[in-house]
Length: 346
Image 1 (cartoon, rainbow, N blue to C red):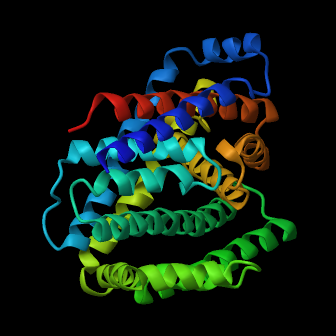
Image 2: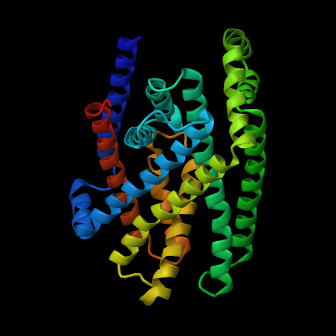
Image 3: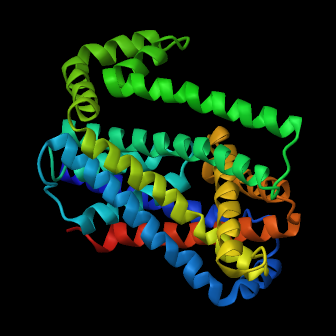
């Protein structure tokens, strides 16, 4: 078994390294232009990359709350190990299609070294659910940020914008309902039911259920138990995940300030600029997640940044710059994640 896990670890490592190579050769600009953008960013690259130390720290604390709420006791692994698995898991998620194709299996494999397989699986599923649940809250609350700025005369509001915002609200409310059902009743059995309706998958699903029915029921019970019995851990994780996205918006703020965009400066101007940064990240992540089946979301994130920045009345050139620097940041953190996979086994 140990040898099998080592082979899987090497496979994940290879996927991450291959993704970096692909990303380096799929920039929409030449390497000369890329270097010019990096030179323009200059020392601002330090806080842009460094802010993710805090973002991943909040993610790790959110996952730690999930693990402890799921187990009903203090996590049997150090915060550093959770932090390392968080960074590496997200690095693999960046590298593979459909989000969790690499990161979540890797986290389950590693976490099962510290807890039993069922609790490892349910903890990872619960955290993945919370990660997406917080995304919807981020998008939902961003609507009200936009409306507040529009009422203040800072941003435009037109019938088309109003309809778009209304669609996003309905979209979020619908998924709030789905998440509430998943948290109350468990998710794995429900997902298997959906898969069974896909042509050609019913027989496979029935065989899978026959072999693993007891394990699936235990995992679903653990998922439902966190929401029903340990609400403190649930909401602590949700708040931490939500604020990780608020902190993430700081990298866009730094890039806007780099271009001298500060809405007049001072506390008021910086506050408005930061709210603009939240809206840019919110719209971009919504756009990217809607088309999340693309590996590394190639082209999707870039388009999202350009569109969201243009929607706030800023130049498309700024959108291109932000998307390129964010792509560089992703590559750096994928490399860090792959390095952590190999240098720390504690």
